[in-house]
Amino acid sequence: MSMPGLRQEHGEGKAMTLWERILQGVTAFSLETIIGTVAAVLGARLVFQYLPIADYGQLALFLSFYATGRVFLSFDLGRILIAEIARARGTGELGWARFLISRFSMFSLTMGTLLLFLFVGIGVRQGEMLLWSAMGVYLWLTALNTSARALLHGTTRYRRLAAQSITASLGLLTVRATLPWWWSGERLSGVALTYPLMELATALASVYLARAAWLELKESSTTAYNYRNLLSLFAQKGVYATLSIPVQKLASQLPIWFLNAMVGDVGVGAFAAADRAYHLIFTFFASTETTLFPLVSELAHIDTERLRVALRQAQKYTFWLGLIVAVVGNATASWVMLLIAGEQYARAIPLLRLLLWGLLLHAFSQSQRPIFYAIGKQKWLFVTSLLSTAIECALLFIGIGLVGTIGAAWGVLLRSCAFVTIGYILIRRLAPGLWIDPRGILKVEEFDLRLWRGLWGRR
Image (tube, rainbow, N blue to C red; front, top):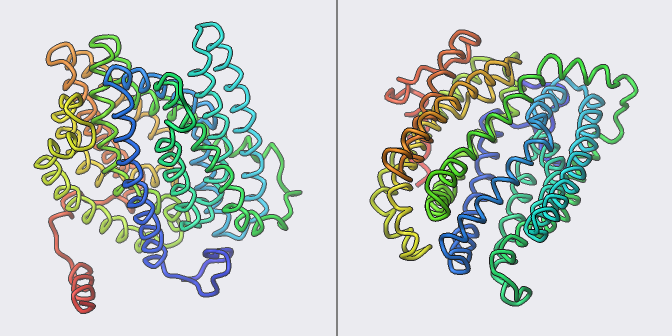
């Protein structure tokens, strides 16, 4: 089925099928993940060599302030923007897509500037000017790159989106590897400075990478659109998305804050190291959701059956791959952590082993957020996030109090279980045509047989 306004990477002439587009996205993001993971492992090893575990705990705390500030850069409007740009391209409303991206860029850069001044002010007041300023500049540059990322993602330019991420990964590795050459002060401050420097390199690349996507929209007229249209979109889809993003970000930082209050810097450092190692592995799985997000919005009201098949197969393959990685990861976690971080981070090993089982839960959750956005039911995503976060708070308090640092890992894992369960119940009621039976992971279908025959025939 062809759809008006849908074009692929700039310069490509032939239209691609849904599976070809998914394959292109997953391939691009898989390459990004491989390069990013290698760079991240090497970069993490350098950081672990530079900082003892207590200093790493302090760095994780400052990065949690950055993550909290990042909430206010867009209030999750970027996700709405991505879905809406994809929908606008599918219907040929390129002027609306241009209007959205331009206003979003203005908003995020304005918020980034305000946050920069706020962070510098806090640094002056608390006598930690360098660390707070580094996080403030990091936020401002993130605002710039977030705008470019939203444009590339919404126009499904997966290869350029992956290139932006690769630039960030390699940039961060480069500044960390050369840290002793350009920084002679306290190592904690030097490592903190590597983050805004990485974002600066990414910003320079983003200007080039986003150029083709912007040229596609540049000639489209925006005279038919105004801020009333924007407010209408926000009222329909943005209110609960704006409310949900602080809750989601809060949930991601809760373990750090609870551990900082109940255990101290060493416990924070151990959990942060395990969480960092988990997310290095998780990036291999996140590419599927990143690819699906705009495509679900394009096809949710056009070709539901084809989309449902794609979601079902993605769930199945992600689950079994996650199971394999979790089993292998548990067997090798001790060796990997000691190789990368050293003996002083040994207490992070049991935390990593537990967190790895979250990969299985991701197989079921990866399509939930795209579906909520595609059907315009973000309020239920907010409810899901709110309930699961409330559960996490209780679990963290009880778990850390009873068993220490590993209680934080249990809190994260059980929170994910709650999120997936609530999401499944809601989607079955709100969008039964897109609901995927979780028992499907055990079924071998004709599609699977054709896929395996095709792969086997290529050998």
